[in-house]
Image (cartoon, rainbow, N blue to C red; front, side, top):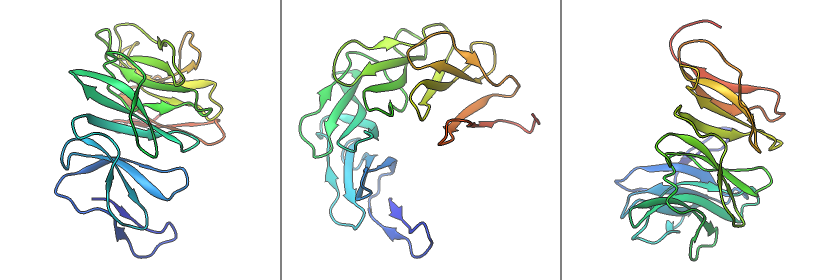
Length: 219
């Protein structure tokens, strides 16, 4: 279930009560509520006000929807949905309505992430038989691969200025952190030590990347 607690400390408050798990929780841009995925009737997207109240469904009952991400301006949410046996990206107004399909037979597997300017979505996809990084324009048009090879490229995240993408790849052996221009180009490996790394996040000023490393090895 979903709970909230004041960042300054204090009593936590329960927002949902259901036998199914709530996951992939995202705040609305104005902090007035939360969007999350839950299989309470079917895996779909739901919204609840931070002050409590009824949980409202955002997506249709016959569509499996997951991995929501709210746009930088707070007006829309992008998510993955399984429709007619195909997994694709869909866009939906935060007020609800009919979702707009952004891709065709994408096979997306990861968390879609908005560019800081709100014009692009990046995610990992299994389309083509491997895990690659795919860039999708929000306002229509063809998406394109930023990586396409037999290695596993996953977890792309935008730099704060939108100029670069950091991601995890095993193209040189074990999983390492790589950096690539957001309009494509040759990636640069920025970590190089076993064991495998997992992506964390950029610092707000774009000067640092946090990541986690398995095992007990020292840098």
